[in-house]
Image (tube, rainbow, N blue to C red; front, top):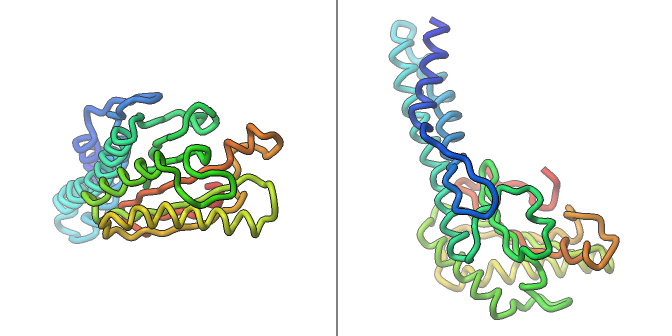
Length: 241
């Protein structure tokens, strides 16, 4: 019976995640890895729940539970994958699977996909003037595009985080980073978005590189927008995960 149960979970997960391809670099991401992982996790949980429903019908219950769980998990993952591709396309870039992309100073916008979120990173140089929390016109147009997309996904929770370099006091940088994140969140809200949107200031916490040179400090100054299907998946963007 244990062998049958394991086989059910495996078959269910494969059935809902089959024919996936991986991609690297700045391209439209067809891997839909969150769809695949959501299907697998959902299948495992659903099958486990189903197997406990009935002593006499464990096999049948596990099959049904696994199928239902895989469908739910795949659906949630698909939404994240779809949003990542749509946002990248709207911003004139691609989805990056390169963990070193954030260290490339020539990349002003980077769209990545985490396990439970989509992240859009904007370089500070394109967003704000020095010591200012007023969005530059070109940056405002980019933020508006994200707001327009969120209208199609009202269930998505958005979290905006601001980051500075280490020049000046922690408190000053905290206030500036929070003000910048709030500005971005408010621009999104002004265009009729009903999504839950939160702003957080991270000061010079979680630097991408040491703050030892002007070039390194420029990499650390940024705004990140996280999109979640469920608010319970939200992370603390100011801490390394």
